[in-house]
Image 1 (tube, rainbow, N blue to C red):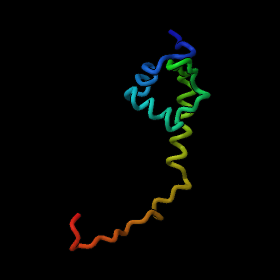
Image 2 (tube, rainbow, N blue to C red):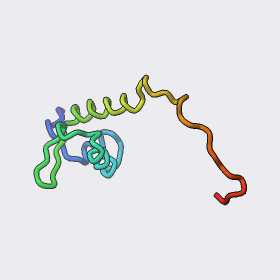
Image 3 (tube, rainbow, N blue to C red):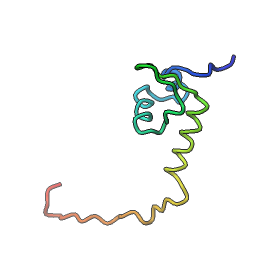
Image 4 (tube, rainbow, N blue to C red):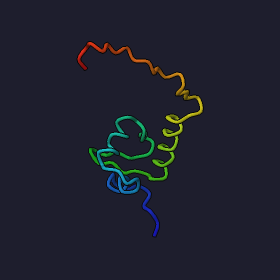
Length: 84
């Protein structure tokens, strides 16, 4: 059985095993760019292969070789007399 060219948001959430709210968040943060879906009114239809490609590139940006975790600040200026 072939996948339809454009599918509803429920199919995207099932494909990635996430909630519909998570997919909506990805759209808001542009992890799923507008080039991967068609929107008419409040209805979205997604191209799953394009969404997979888009999310793969987002993952590469988050975990890239340029990310140097050793440079992250690790010292905290905590006053032991101060309530936390």
